[in-house]
Length: 424
Image 1 (cartoon, helix red, strand yellow):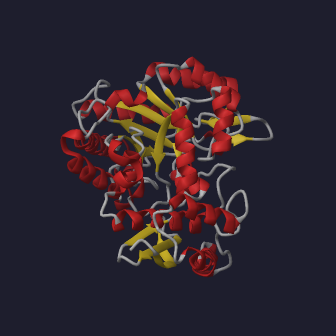
Image 2: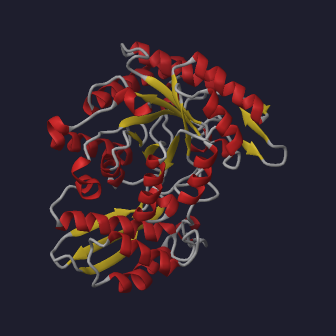
């Protein structure tokens, strides 16, 4: 019943209209797992490699090589195996690739395959994916970190920081958190239209608005005004920011360009402290260049107990990179993106190390995502209490939110929504 009888790779499109890898895994018992690989625009140097074809077809972004690797290299080795042997199968994917960054097979090929295997096993067992991955203890719905104003490489405006985030931490349940967030989103839409005109309602890669703002204070003020207009306060809604500072860093001068001026690391640290004192900031992600763990550590110390300082490019879901950060006490949180490392088992090892050392895990989407809702189940499975998957708009984002609504309904009275406790 659990024998893998088919592994098939093919094409699909992601939310930016770029091709990506789709993998279907079928078992002898009739179950089917389908997974699609997401793609990031802002990538850390330590990420596993997304294999692209180059050339003229698909504007150079074709994934024919990765798809061929699934069908010609991976499939023959996985057929006949027990689909429940996730770690063994992921070990085969790593061995077949044989590189430290999945550059032979492509992380888009290995990620889609690994996730499809987990989905097929879950279906064959007639067990919800979150329960299959997390066991009977999987019951915590995540607080959504919603990117409502886009900047950086996710938008076409002049905002340096990449994401300005709304956090419905004061809700009592996930569905209430979603309702509150939607009300703030629509309030923000009205506010931006009044102040900047209809063109400000264009959205960025993650569903957040991309208004013609130039400095960060404009974005924070707009979010605070939208929260108030929706009838809420900071007891209901907190704010966050993903600086994606590696994208703002000039390696030659060792400085950052933010808000129309140049900052040293020390000056930028003071700027974050001022932002945190002026606004209800509960979350700061990638505040410095990915190699500058020391500046991140200093900021973590300065904002201890008040603001979660999170590493994304800093760690790239790699346990080795995380171990270095843990040793230095560089952050209090870490982003988990399966395609940054290339297999589910490696991502789970990363999560286990983080949780064991007291770090918060934030399960995250990518800016070029798909309608695959795997990360919703993964967040509940790990009881992380936090998820990043964009604004409450665009179907590749809402697919995750809609799945979380289903999970909360399935769990019934056993469902837990941690609210502000998720940040403690």
